[in-house]
Length: 223
Image 1 (cartoon, rainbow, N blue to C red):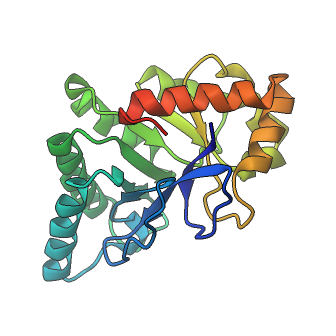
Image 2: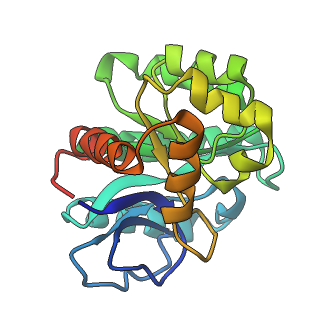
């Protein structure tokens, strides 16, 4: 059983890892290894202004979701630092959620300073039971509890290690589903597993097994 890197942009993975690589519609999938999968989405910071380009991106997303290698839509979401208005971001996010619904794929969410809107949006899709995963969460325990109570799944990266309060989120939610990710870090996800296992006083193999079981349930595949 390998270490699952739930969300990564890094291109060289060790033989001990299985990775879900996040790419944009204008990026090519580049890897034929059995232990590398993909997600694809329109990031809120890179929404094309040209409507024709946007239409092309939506077409690419749909074609990619037809293949087994693409496990999820994303990363996509809402970000108040984006040059695109929050209204336009919501519109583009809704388009991607509709694709996720069509293909029964989870959606990987990037959210910055827009959790109120994200929680409101999630309610609109609750009846469809579409999995929403917040990647790289760095918020408070209160926010994490709000999100999990609303049905979001959480994924954590290395930045959580830099703040004891953020680490407490993992401790409070350790009985719920969560994932670990390298995001843009160059040294893969394995050191993060060891740090989180040590903090939770779990064996690292136990943590790896739990996350693989959760991932199998989420994506309906064996990693």
